[in-house]
Image (cartoon, rainbow over all chains, first blue to last red; front, side, top):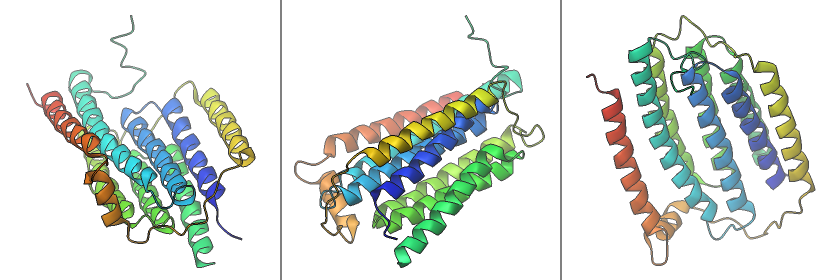
Length: 103
Length: 162
């Protein structure tokens, strides 16, 4: 069986949905951040697969994937710093208890 | 044929590892599972003949981001509390499954225009040309550098002890 574009797209759809479930259903802020990384990885697979199968000579998708990785690294650094700051104040990173900005 | 076997192995392990991230009770094991998933994604990049991206994936995700995440888990003593689910666990599962269904139906029914050209084999020099070369992505590269700098400064300011 030949592996084509659709196999990669469906795989990345599965990974993205798992990440989406984790973001919606988890209360631990670090786990939520990990699931966001999972979703970004799924998007990267899609970009690289399109780059490989639709425009193999241009590498546009791979350039985009590199920028996504850069933004993901920045996002993780700032996100974990925010988690540290919240943890110092509240001694907890349960997102259902972080409700100071409710109104 | 070898490519197909590699794809199915990598895809199966990646999906199982991703499920481990959301299903494992122990936060530290979930982080290790996430690292395994990152490694499998790097392998998938190799099957897509994106060698440079595979190396970047291992350097940035497996090397740097996973260390940051494990550091965060150890700093916040979350291992004892585990990884609890919120009240929205069942609605979240329904939303995720419905989203997946719509996505897969769309992907299967769309006529993609597959090109028959073989892919560029070592991608590193071609990527460098399109990132830094004439008419390339030089401005986004510079903006990415500024973004990383501001992210580092923001992280230091946020995480610093008062």
